[in-house]
Amino acid sequence: MTKKILILPGDGIGPEIVAEAVKVIDCLRAHHGLAVETEHALVGGAAYEAAGSPLPEATLALAREADAVLLGAVGGPQWDALDRPLRPEQGLLGLRAGLELFANLRPAILYPQLAEASSLKPEVVAGLDILIVRELTGGIYFGRPRGVETLPDGRRRGFNTLVYTEDEIRRIARVAFEAARRRGRRVCSVDKANVLECTELWRQVVTETAADYPDVELSHMYVDNAAMQLVRAPKQFDVMVTTNMFGDILSDEAAMLTGSIGMLPSASLNAEGRGMYEPIHGSAPDIAGRGVANPLATILSVAMMLRHSLDEPELAARVEAAVGEVLDQGLRTADIAAPGTREVGTAEMGDAVVAALRT
Ligand code: NAD
Image 1 (cartoon, rainbow, N blue to C red):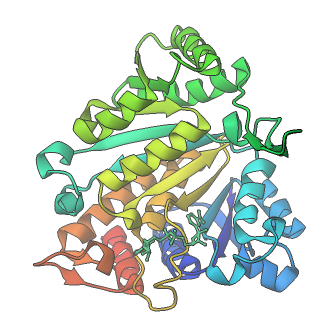
Image 2: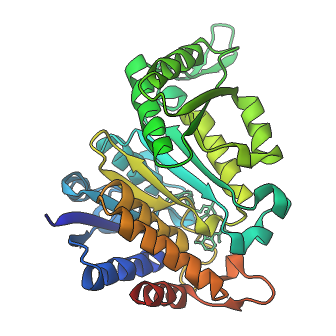
C-alpha cells in the first residue's frame, strides 16, 4: 500500500537540506520500489508569514493523515520578538502534541571517517553507537502546577512539577526495550531515584517492564553519573532511556561526542509507530541561503523514517550505507571538513548520496 509522507521544510537551512532528502526519497521511489506519496506544507516562521500561524490547521490535518512527517528545521531571529504562541518553535511543539509523539529516538553514531571531529580522543569515541530514548510529552516540561508567583511578603517564587504516571513510563520503556532488541540488547535507564520520588517510580516501572524482555539486559544509572560516564567511557552504552528533561540534556551531550551536529537524525514516534523525523540541529540562520549546510542529518532522518514508520529496513540500511560511501569518497560539507578531504556544498552532497544509492 502506498504510504504518505508529509514534507515540512520550515525555515533557514530547512528548505535547502530537505530538498536533498527529497532527492533521496525520489531515487528510492524511482529505482528501489519505495511506494510513497509526498506532499509539502508550511510550518514555523514560513507558515507564520503565509498564514499567520506557525502551525496552520491545514498542516496539522495533513500531518495527522500522513504515515510519516519529514521536517527540516524552524526558527530564526526575525521571529524571536513575536508573542510566544506565534513563534516558529510553537509549530514544532504543536506537531509533537497534536500527533502524540511521546518517544524521541536520538542515535549518536560516530562515523569512523569523522573520528577526528570529536572533541574526545579518537580511541574513546571510535565506533560509538548509542541510542537515546527520551520521553517527550510528559515530565517536568509539561507538569502542572507551573508558574511564577509573588508571595505575600513580595518575594517571587517559580515552580514546575515533575510528574509521570506509570503508563507513561511503561510505554517509553517498551520503546527502549524493543529498540534494544534490534541492536545490542542492553538498556540503561537513567533517573535520579535517590532524590526524586517520581523517578523512584520510574525505576520501579522500568524494572517491572523488563520482565517482558528477558533477552535484554537492564541497568540503572543516576543522571549525574550518566552525564559523567558519557564523556568518560561512552561506548559502555547501547540504549539509554530517560525522562524528558534528562533526555534533553543527555542527548545533546551525546550528540557532541560525535563532533558534528550536521550528521545526526532523530525520530519522534507515537503509539502507532507513526512519526516525525528531523535532524537534531536547528535552522542555522548564520549559513542559510548559502548552499553550504550539511544535508546528511536530514538524509539519515529519511533512513530512520524507512525503518520506524515505513517498514523498509533494507532501504534504510541502503541509505545509511550510501552516506558512509560518500564519506569514504572524501566528500565533506564545511562543518565536517578536514585536511585531505574535498569540500562540497549542500546540493553536491545530496547528489553524491543519490549517485551512491543508484550503484
Ligand atoms: P543551530 O543548530 O541552528 O545552529 C548551531 C550551529 O551549528 C550554527 O553555527 C550552525 O551554522 C551550525 N549548523 C547547524 N546545522 C548545520 C548543518 N546542517 N550544516 C552545517 N552547520 C550546521 O542552533 P541555533 O543557532 O541555536 O538556533 C538557530 C535557530 O534554530 C533558532 O531560531 C532556534 O530556535 C532554532 N532551532 C530549531 C530546532 C528545530 O527546528 N528542531 C532545533 C534547535 C534550534
